[in-house]
Image (cartoon, rainbow, N blue to C red; front, side, top):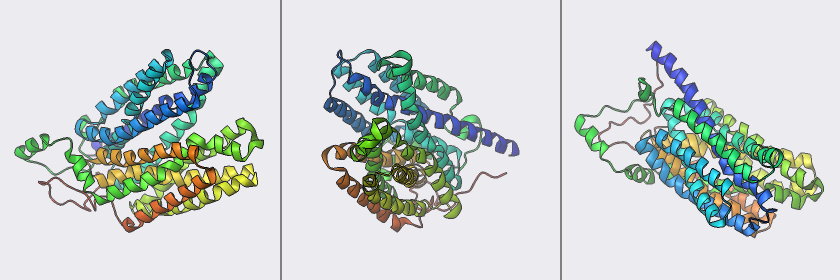
Length: 441
């Protein structure tokens, strides 16, 4: 057993690293189009106006939302290795095509494919981590791991921009360079990733009850839709989906419209300054998931909701104050508020869609639960991209503040919920609620 403990620790580090790298890599092909837009707007050989670009973004976001609801089910059925590796390769391929063939039909098709490919990542990789770490560690582990998407968002755009506009001198390079990164990570993922401890000869971290041969045969014939049906009967997961739907628009509005909003309200900072100021929001995104993960495990005894509720209440205040801060013209105040906003948004964002979804979705349906919750959030993300284009910024941020408050309120009744307490289970399995134990020597 001591040998097993040493080995499981090594595999935990390896799985953490390769899954972190995989999800960060997805952001390179995800942000390639946003970087390429700068060059496309000045390219006389490929005429795309802002409305066409916005429509392409909508195609991507819609496909991404649809994929979140489906890939989690398949990751539970076939394992993250097949699903996520396929997503990485297809994402790289779609970006490569966009970098070499500049026509609207090809771009529209590739954005649809890109959205579906990108959506393989979250639910499958969350399930992968959940298989190697017990419930009482998942809060801080997934909190630390969730820094991957803030990091990916920070480095992907400068990387693609450097290749496109400094090194090569054409927007096509934004797609090609990003595809190369994702392709390389796909190779590393194939080499170093495994689905669960049992695949490398180790005992399960949280063993499922043993089934008879007849029970195992019956379970193997269960439809891939059974996990989804169980999730739809799980009230806690449904509440998480609702809370995430209300939370996600604010994040995507800031990511997609932050520079525009800052420049409109503070034109004196210039376009470059308006592009740099919102990065404080993403920088805070590196810390928010780590802090809330530690809080949920250490301060609240693996209860996810208290940390989320408190963070969402603080987010409500920062969203309500944001436009007033912009009107003061103080760059320091705006940067500080965006930083606090990032801390209080990225924290519950990662917790709700990651650790909480895995905890309450059960081991068998963990990817389905993560996919369902993140799918609900992805629908909200579409609204986050649309609303700032149709309404004034003051109205939009008042709405976002109300949404954050609503998210906190719907989670309060689940304040004392713990991992395992609301699990659904196989009909033949004994009642194991609240009997989650860590791997011991």
